[in-house]
Length: 376
Ligand SMILES: [Fe+2]
Ligand SMILES: [Fe+2]
Image (cartoon, rainbow, N blue to C red; front, side, top):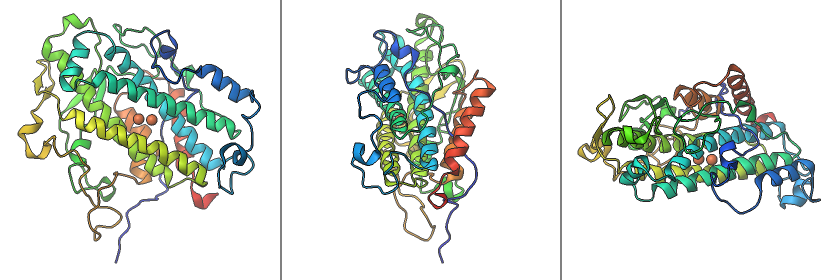
């Protein structure tokens, strides 16, 4: 007899919320990732206004989709809620990746410490940032094309960035007091699966620590700046593995094949990000910051062997089935939109944000988690 997990439970979840898709910092000359060569602002405006003639073509004509439920140039309410929540998540993701990129692109001890971990780290960080820009822009543009409201979080761009950030601009997210969950590292080396109730220890206790410099970099000891870079190195895959679970969980709620295609295709990129960063973090040097943060030698312990970078086969669907290498968790309760918002909030990423910000974010999450094929 097969015992199913709570894969499709109706518990509420939340995620992030997004806005139109460009960070103030990125718009500053030379600060943003260089992509594509076309103006994002103009592109979005044209979509919103229907300029260019084709922006509001019916979905079937515009996209060539073989999806009987999108023939009127729109998508279901549930699919729109899913895509709106993901747009919000991507806007927030873009905001903090942009902050990392600004620091990584400036010569100095922090960039050098990132390069101690992986020579190509500055390039990887910028590429990841570019991908996040593309995700939020695409999702919002698609919503507009489907005659659904895009997400705009610009009114919440009120947080101060690091006082020594290369670009001084208000932010949506806070990288200066992070509680980085490092349990994912053991989770992906284990046959356990959170959807079956399994829990995992932290590899490193990272509580209320900055992942970017917060004072003149020359004032840090070598160990301190390496500890900050190591914190970032654990934060990158923490975010991306969460994104992989989130996209998987929400894909199961899509009504149309068109929405499903978008969610699974972007979700695949989150998995790609995760695995790159998973490999990279295995190269952190052991370091004691001297002020309370200790990174162990990952190679010294069989359980944290950096070579074990592929997702270990784990319990999936039913404990009496063979172990399977999969993304985990994927239940709504643990990987849905509300769960994602709660998780990110607990990491301190939104520290300093207003109650309205959280209200908006949890509302978007709730709507996304409510979506479901059977309800359409
Ligand atoms: Fe993304
Ligand atoms: Fe991502």
